[in-house]
Amino acid sequence: MAQMMGTLVLPPFVAAAIVEHAKRRRNSAGYLVGSRSGNQITVTDYIPCTHESTSDVRTRAYAEELKERVALKKCYTPSITLVGWYAAATPEPGKERAFDLWCQAPGASFSKIRSHNQAVMLLGRMPTAADLSIRWEAYITSNMNDGDSLQCERMQQLTVCVEAETPSMNVLLAEMISKTLYNGSMPYPTNRITNLDRVAVEAESREAEFGRKDNSRNDAEPRPVEAALLNVQNKLHQAISHARAILVSGNKNKSERQNESAAVVENYEAILAEKSQQSSRDDFITESYKDALMIKYTAALLRRHVMEIERHGRQELKEKTQHGHGHGQNNTSSPRGPRKLGAFR
Image 1 (cartoon, rainbow, N blue to C red):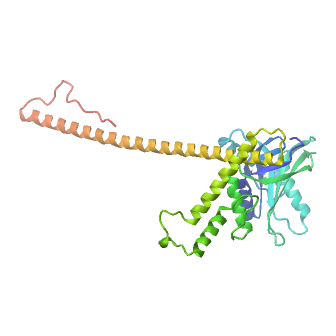
Image 2 (cartoon, rainbow, N blue to C red; image 1 turned 60 degrees about the horizontal axis):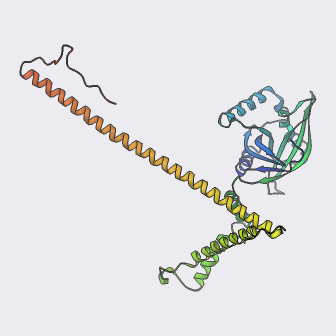
Image 3 (tube, rainbow, N blue to C red; image 1 turned 90 degrees about the horizontal axis):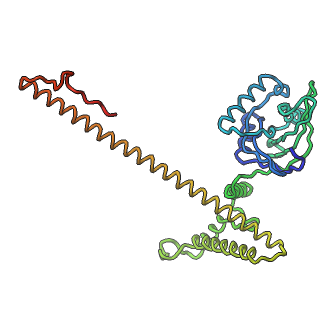
């Protein structure tokens, strides 16, 4: 791995799974699946494989277990790459050194005999009585096996960024984090982003202050909440149009305002593209579902007609047989006997 890497992008579902695993077992460890690009390492998945002691990771049983889990993961995603490992636990008082050794132990899977091999180490420090927050740390490590012991050296610290792959999910996560930090109360707008919940609450409170309830309001008149949200939407479209106009103006001297406008337009177009892609996927799923229902309905109709044909065929054969016996004639129309109707199923 290159020395220029400075950021580790950790998806929310991976972070949540690691924390939940550590809460149930009091510790958790495993390996990180991902990719690297430029100065960024992006985690896409994880493989849990918790060790009890530092010596467990160097046993043959542990190596075989890890090999099986990696092979199972490759059945669904063949081109995965292990970029490092993770370890999450609560360090006991006075046992920081033992905690560090336990966290560094999975580096044995990346170590080579008398040769340094780099990998990412992600540490999750679980909450304690003194510190109720979860703290993430990430390092690029150099691992070497000298035959008797493992050497794990921290080469460079990385910035851990818990971030989703899509802009809309990041907006949703930011909203959840904001509400969590405000203990469930109504958070205030931050970073120039209007909080829609606050807009709706303020509009509803104004409606109550003026005493305009639903029973005394004209049905054709929009509610203050709807009007407030539409106002926010119009302002958003105006801001996007203004940002695009600044970019189209073609001023060669790029100012901070132009850079900000470019970022606004880029994020807006990314969200629109994601929304369009999601709509196309929803349409595809809906059409597939309708096609499946039509096939099932057609098969039921076909089965019904086949049963009718078989029933009439058996009735006709029975009538011909009875008619032949009544006139003393041979009930066979050919030397081979009566022809049987083959069931069409």
